[in-house]
Image (cartoon, rainbow, N blue to C red; front, side, top):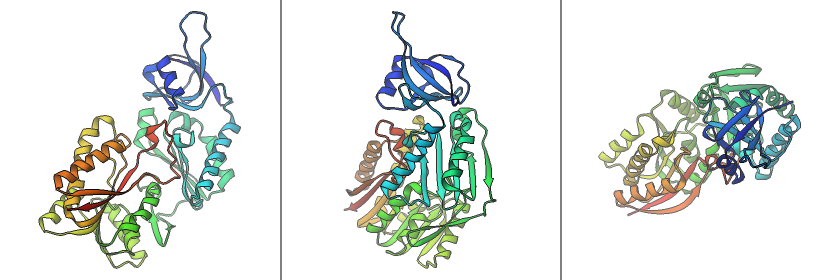
Amino acid sequence: MLESGQVWVRKRGADRIRRGHLWIYQSDVLRTENATPGAIVTVHEEKPPSGARDAIVGKAFYSSKSQIALRFLARGEVRIDEGFIRNRFSEATALRAKLGVDPLFSRRIYSEGDFLPGLIVDRYDDRLVVQSLSQGTDRLQPLVLSLLQDQYQPRSILLRNDSKVRQLEGLQLKQDLVGDPLPQIILVKEDDQEIAINLTEGQKTGAFLDQRDNRRAAKRYASGRALDGFTYAGGFALHLSSVCSEIEAVDLSAGALKLAKSNVERNGLKNIRCIEANVFDYLREKHGEGVRYDTIVLDPPAFAKSRDQVPSALRGYKEINNRAMRLLKDGGILITCSCSHHLSESLFAEMLAEAGNEAGRWIRVLERRIQSPDHPVLMTVPETLYLKCFILEIRG
């Protein structure tokens, strides 16, 4: 039995779910009954004391710590049992097959985007990486492991529960391994490139699966001398190596640069230089030297990790994009990204327009892109759309 407990919420919270979101905040919880941390609870909208019966809003994971008190699995009176969760896994798999997603190298479960809030599952061939981001998915972990072993028969499942988001849920940061020991690095094939990733120490779950299609798109427009800012393991640089004459792959992290250099060497590429530097400073220096580029990629980490940080994040994004636009030749290509879900696409676009005006450049939009389709976006949950990628032609 997966369900236990009841929660009563305000009309405001119930209406939020009826409009299609999956979250109710702690401020809209009126009272609970037998709702233990991580339980799947029945959520009621409390009616005024006029004889009307409380309406059942749906079933949700309950958190005793987070400001997001309820993460919904279903609306209405639906029984949540092992069969329900198994069906959600099957639906996620079917969606990726329909989208033509690589079955061996992709995100298999994307949290709210797959109606399994708080759960991430990435597949790297015969290794799986699982992230639990809430009390609810932590409590469900034995079932999740059983379903994954049935479906994939993996050699290893790494429970990479070290995301700081877990602290908001009062959860411990840790890693656990089920199955065979993991090698220090594993090799994955992306198009024509062989890429080494570190599942235990790398960003996210080891690789930026969400940028895969954007790297392919960038290759269609890139040429000449290129700069790949915030290169991490060299993902964009590797893809651009066949269409650009020379590429400067820049990152401040020595660990990231070591991985990028190994990937460059592994693929026998002679036109990529890996440079350890602060990208902000590097752009400034190159402008001072009078250097000009045909192509620039900017794929920084999230500058805004909360709503309060959006104003300062916009200043950071504006600075690096302004400097990149000044460094590009007339007709040069800028591929620029933001993975801050608190920063909307419209705000990002407005910032880019301002950066272009201040640089005295015209901007022509060639493509507006988002994360790869194995990270599906739920229209009424804007938080599921976090990655923005603009491919721009810079003129003037």
